[in-house]
Length: 410
Image (tube, rainbow, N blue to C red; front, side):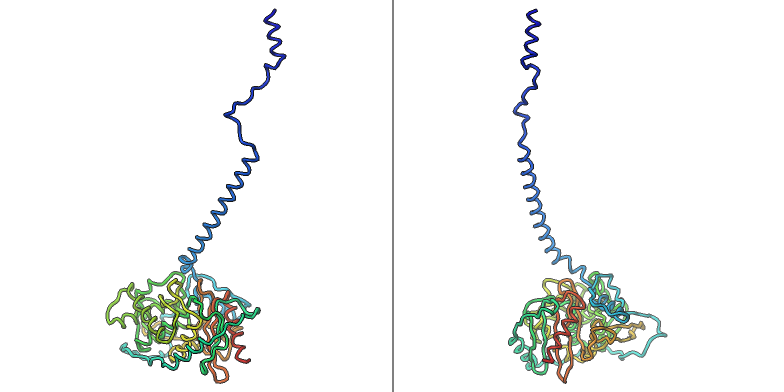
């Protein structure tokens, strides 16, 4: 009886309550856990963003040159479209670099009379630049001013307008800042080759074609093709063929070295010839590595130096004639036919950018350089050079060039 009463008292006084949890299983307050997690996520995001930015900058220096837009494909595609409806703007797009504006045929039935006679490949020396010419350009560059870019002008990395006759720099915007030269380099490549070889030297396209970067613009020459240096220069400056630039470099470097060079030895030898000529004509802040102007940290120039290059190129008859030609049909010495169209739309009457005063010179487009144009005009008996560098689109480089030329009327 007593035991039964005792058991009943235990039940009534709380022996059935749940026990307190032991200290070992207690947790932190819920709000503390949420705060800690949020801070951790924010820290990780900051670290990830910083790392991504750094990687992106590294990629732009190392990987970007492998995907730069092919010059020939971009400009000639727009030239073809211009015959139907002129676009307001056309961004160059990376492609296989097949050179849509160049066509080659191996049948002799469609050939036309060749422009040159075969030569033995004898070398010659081009008349050196005069001291007066170098001084004229240097003096003008030193006297330049840097006006503010008008707000209606397209964005660019550099712009300039120069009159050759009186050495007057009519407009200058960041002309001393370093920029990538893109395919404007090919003007120097042609000039350097003509200092060593005759324009009628017959060249054979060879294994140097393996040195081409992927997605290069092409004029569609192939190993085994035989054509003159004059015609290679046409393919290089009109169709902006990187393939032609490498064959020009290979033949010239081997001739200058007086012996056989491996394909790997071609580039440093030819780059030495390019840089020597650049220094001779007064390009004081330029350095070149590749004959086609492919992006590289060690390859750079300035708008002021490009004016000097353009002024010199106009004194070389073979270069002036080629850069002022819209279209050409050539028969290789090995029998193939080729049609090349100039990438410079200033020369194309079917283009919205056509200018009757234009006489050359060269377009250029790479990832680092943007859309560039070094142009030459003859107006009122005077020769003018313009530089439009680092433009955002193909259309912008032509719009900027037109605006620069309007300053000749003021």
